Length: 163
Image 1 (spheres, helix red, strand yellow):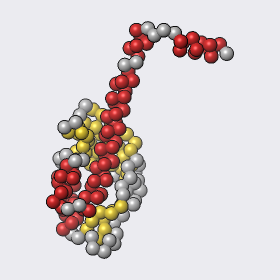
Image 2 (tube, rainbow, N blue to C red; image 1 turned 30 degrees about the horizontal axis):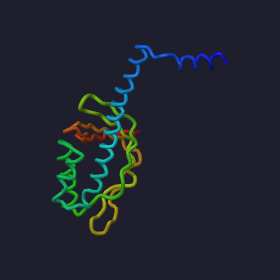
Image 3 (cartoon, helix red, strand yellow; image 1 turned 180 degrees about the horizontal axis):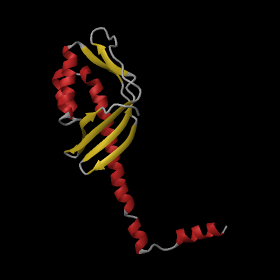
């Protein structure tokens, strides 16, 4: 019962300059959180755009992918999409991110993901027959860069192993 009274008294006590300074910490945390949220959204959006790229006119692929990626990943992803198209293939399904970590260092960030790609892969463009299927627990490390105020994927790495 004494604890309840003490807590009440502490809440009703006037704020001191020390109390005011502690109120600025959440702002820094909020900025970090909003950056983290923006990074997660950008990372997930990269996969959505990449998976649906071949549903759009090839003349728009550069523009579409440039909204979510920068070089070297932009170039790598475009080359892979064009290679698939030339081979009569397309992507199918959905890649599901299971992000386990986000590290921010200024204008760069690292995302660690245990991606579920088991509902996606490569299919024959004419028949729709699945040629490949992804795995359920695919370790992915992505590097993102802040480019013109927007987070974009700069590099995707598949380190192998398990997650």
